[in-house]
Amino acid sequence: MSYQIAIDGPAGAGKSTIAKAVSKELSFVYVDTGAMYRAMALLCIREKIDGGNEDKVVSACDSADVKITYKDGAQVVMLNGEDVNGFIRTQEVGDMASTISVYKGIREKLVKLQQELGEKENVVMDGRDIASCVLPHADLKIYLDADVSVRAKRRYDELIAKGQPANLEKITEEVKERDYRDMHRDNSPLVRVPEAILVDSSYMTIDEVKNAIIAEFEKVRK
Ligand code: DC
Image 1 (spheres, protein in one colour):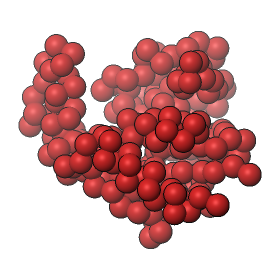
Image 2 (image 1 turned 90 degrees about the vertical axis):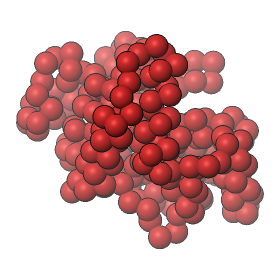
Image 3 (image 1 turned 30 degrees about the horizontal axis):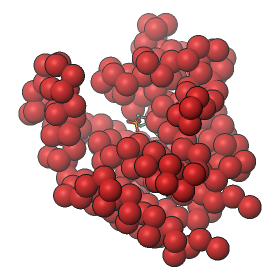
């Protein structure tokens, strides 16, 4: 029998950091579903496909081979046999991922892959539709949120730390736009399902959030 922990929430709430920390502590497999949408987005950018052209996006992604493997415990996304981890973390790829993830043809392919991963192992899976669609019977469902201003500031600090130019006002607008798109699309929008436990990470440390989630898991562990 395997355990499933679903963590959903908006961009910048800290899902991947937290999901990674929780999976490490429990020795579960971490599945970052956003990385799969990002790999598809990278493919579209490389092939110069307009993200607004659903037919072209879906047909390009249909024939693409996306796989998840693990190297030293970390998830590696393989796109047509290439490790693309190093190319998918840019703002451009994130925005394209948000744009093309509205298409049913894209979601069906990736959800199937995610469900297969969730059946085999104890998993902590993060995304937007994990509790509502991918793992509807997950043992624990967390909705990880944070104030828009806090999420924008985190992104701003990240860019500054990398020595890249950043404008807090512009980033705040981009975060709001991404939230709107992810929450208002027709196919599997980001929602907090009623049974999901809300964790607001705005003023919590990573350890506090991790411990809160582990404590919730201990309550449901059989
Ligand atoms: O979590 P992330 O920033 O890596 O996700 C990038 C985009 O992919 C996000 O804006 C929406 C989409 N996504 C999705 O639609 N469903 C998921 N389960 C994960 C991500």
